[in-house]
Length: 427
Image (cartoon, rainbow, N blue to C red; front, side):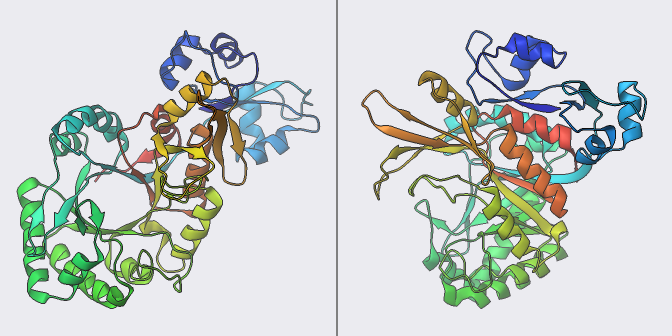
């Protein structure tokens, strides 16, 4: 599979000819309206096996093979040319598909009401063949140790039909916010902890959920050791019942990182007791903050490399957003950016006739525009290039896989690129 970045004047027909495919195949793979114009800078997934490379001055089969992690002999055989043949600039070389490695994938799904649950079904059905885990968000801890369940709808049955493990996601949310006071209540009360664990295990058995996932956030720094002790206790109970146990971690770059979102998340402790962790490597750019990439790859890699000093890479699911944000400029504290899907971002760029740019350091697409009221905007989002860069990082660092927050926004290229890069493990 190949990623193509649209250049000025290009059409689906012209691009399809270059890659020996059809406009219909391109439109279907990228969920495009064939009657709409393409956007300069827009990335397209080309649904072909392998990819093509156009020879540059100074290239040889040996340099091209090294670039694409293959062998000169394999390239010569695939292109029916001699191993020692000189290559002219502009000559098209076919690069065969490389063997895929196995990885695990998780996706959270959050139904706010029955209507949203119905609309989310199609996203769950689309994603499920490419998932190891599905995480309905969330079972909320109550102050007496009981659980307030989410709207599950048909999500668990869709997961089962696709060989996907459904998680029981447990959070310390109250009034739609992560509550340090709530976490303090159950982390410091043995009786409430026991009741909570009883309820979690009983619920998992009743609903057929096979992984207990603790997403306890905004914990008081003084409760760090209490949280570690609770996880050790929970792991003994949960593993004793035959369930998996996983946790969610805020993105840290050192053990000394301070703050209520960071201090109490002890990477080493989680790495010891959890079967795997989800590291929430997104929201550098967030709805209530200034405009910037949501998950810049340089910052993501810093977090993951720190995590790998505290736990095996094979326990790490790297977090990834399935959305971007549209900020109004200049940023004003208290303002809120609009969440946009990758498809919606491209539609906005087309509407305002602006090119999509790409930040090579953050490995993220972006563009600016002025709306009808003359207000300036900047949009940072995800595309095929940014996702492929993250997949390359997963493979290069030997991570367990990736976890998505969250289903419900259109991003067809992501799922195609999973198919192209990985064999998704099923439990």
